[in-house]
Length: 204
Image (cartoon, rainbow, N blue to C red; front, side, top):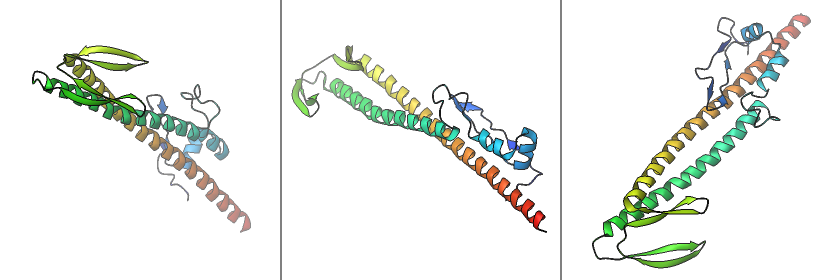
């Protein structure tokens, strides 16, 4: 379907990029867009499929949409990691809170803990002022319960904030994929429409 020539050539995105992800421009008027850009249809379609400068250092052989898909898979993996990490931190906070609540009551805490995958052992925990936290890379440090609680709370807040950013990144990325696909379809359909008009004119 032909686009109206009275509208603007393209609506510029309010954001040119988000954390290294380039924004896509939506072509509102194909004819004016081609005139202003100085491109023919084939060149325009090639342009829409070209590599991004911001991403080509990481994914040089791939087209624009392929690059978007690769970045999406990477972000989804990060999202899954954070979604698994947040409940673990919350469990650790609950354990620290339980230890603090038991302190001074004279009542021991009986707990089952995982020694290795699928192997558990039972422990009797008397009053304690400290806990050990895994920091990653096979590193464990001992903290007081208050220090552990503060550290875990900070890690939880950071993880939730990172998850919110990732969700926004994914939404932005999906919007750019949609814009690129729609723009490519509009340019292609405009070209088909123009060819039919020229063919009809030749036959009359």
